[in-house]
Amino acid sequence: MLLNRENITNAAVMIQPSLISYSFNSLPQPALLDVASISADRILLLDSYFSIVVFHGMTIAQWRNMGYQNQPEHQAFAELLQAPQADAQMIIQERFPVPRLVVCDQHGSQARFLLAKLNPSATYNNSSDIAAGSDIIFTDDVSLQVFFEHLQRLAVQS
Image (tube, rainbow, N blue to C red; front, top):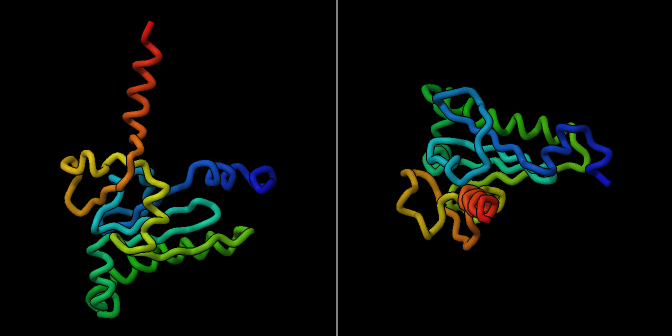
C-alpha cells in the first residue's frame, strides 16, 4: 500500500536502499551496497525508507569518543560528524511514516542494521581479500558477483 502512494524516488528506496558515504577526502557521494564500502575513516548513511542508519567507521568513532569534535582545531571533523545527522533529520522530517533512526559504530551491536542490507562480498570464507579497516559479514550467502557468475554459466550451458 505504501509503495503505491509514494513517489518514484521513495518507491525506489523501498526496493533498493541508498547508501551515502561521507569522508574528509570528498563530498558526500553514493556508495555501493557492499561490505567493501565500509572503511574505518568513513561515515555511511543508509536510507532503507523505514529505517535510517548512520554508521561511523572505527577511526571516526574513536575520534568522536575522544571529543575531537569539541576542539576548535578540529572544526572539519565536527562538520563531518554533523553532515550525515543533518541529512538524516531532513529525510525524517519529510517522510511518513517516520523512519527509525539508528546511529551506530563499526563492530557495535547496532551495526547489524547496516550489515543486513549489504552485499556479502567479503565473508569469513574469503576474509584474506579484504582491505584494512573494512569489515566482513558472517554469512553462508553468496555475493552478488558469485550469483551472477553462476547464472551466466547456467545461461550458456546447452
